[in-house]
Image (tube, rainbow, N blue to C red):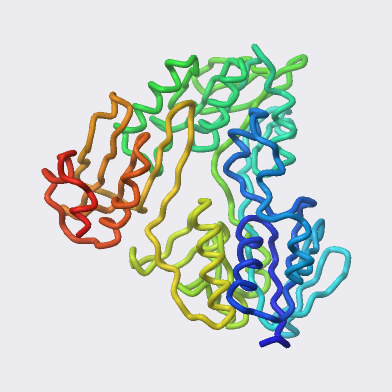
Length: 406
């Protein structure tokens, strides 16, 4: 194995974790980690919160100090854009013509912000928060009393909205659907989130269809399909992400809104693997393919796939888990339910601490906690077991979830 060469394309959270996991697993061959950004591999969740507010030092995002890469003999190639994979020759080619040979290739190319398509001349001015540089750009514009328009009431939009409000901005959120975080959140919990933000001055416009955004003096004019117009000093869009799977598709790999991989991270080419936000991977617990944009998936799937590449064939099988911090609320979500027929509350959300279970035929398929992180571990275990649980026991706080797991 010491003669093998592994190339990792994508030096974000997943790529950085994979490089370290390869060394921890005993891989002694050559590792080349190639990243398009100029920054060391870093975590993204604090970008919309502590780093954006100025409370956290951006250097705390870095997975490891720069010295680690040379000490671990990881050839870190930053500011390098890979434009082609040539599977027949087992090389990747960068924009400046450099080639990197591999025995095994790992794609951790992540995802990019989905761009808003509306009329008007302000398109190039709309801000999208995806990386450190985006945060620096936005931070300079979130000054007190500025009118901030946020398009999209998903995690990223609401986190930015909470941070901007705390900085003294006037925040208005535009959402095309009937409520926030509609893809992952029951309406009951979406209503709680709206009340939380509204109590702190955030204004929501649901069923908001934006037709155009125009420059107007030093600011912008947002025009809606219902004839209304809204002025703003800054326009931010958070309407989802698009997997960076074009490189894989052009190399002939199977893709479908993400690179298709099995539970071991293998693509349709036996020498090429993928991990993180860019993958649509098979989850043995859910028994279907899913694509996740989450810190946990970026880290844990990358670690698991790195171990497979190093010779330890253990599948990646975890209950999906993600979280968001908005004002003083920590919201955690476990599972990946496509539907549910019953919602069971454990605790009173109006008291600030509760957890809601989504059930299908009595089987927990999802759980959402509000300022109740300590119970999420056991909620995930219940979801993984996939067996019916008495709803009365789930709702009874005197019955410990740990006992139900047993």
